[in-house]
View 1: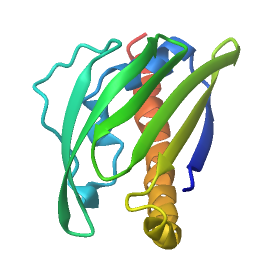
View 2: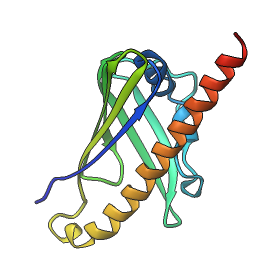
View 3: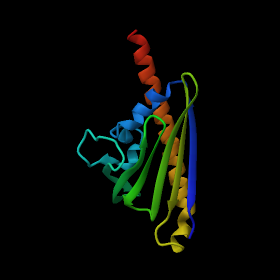
Length: 160
């Protein structure tokens, strides 16, 4: 039985609070997910984010409809939060989001996902497909986060 790990880092020239605020608004998850996944938050919004918050989603993966529920198991703004799958397509999904402002106005975003595929060990035969899909989703997500936050930064600069 294999636990797999996906990691991504992104550095932005913005304060940790500004970056964290994007992630603290659960509705932004739809904005940073590839559109072909038809990702939709089912939980009524706005969602008050805190430890224990449950969020329900629907999406389509390879045309198959999926329901997914996550719980915020760690909530320490603006430093870190963790969402873990309560119900969904994985045997395990633990996603740690860490935010480090290593110099004023420069923030490192670290994503670490520890996951297990269903039907282990048979499911692990298909890990190469899942790994490729997750890489695509998280690469898209990084571009979308950078784009959204750069637009917000530009808009804030114009209003001064």
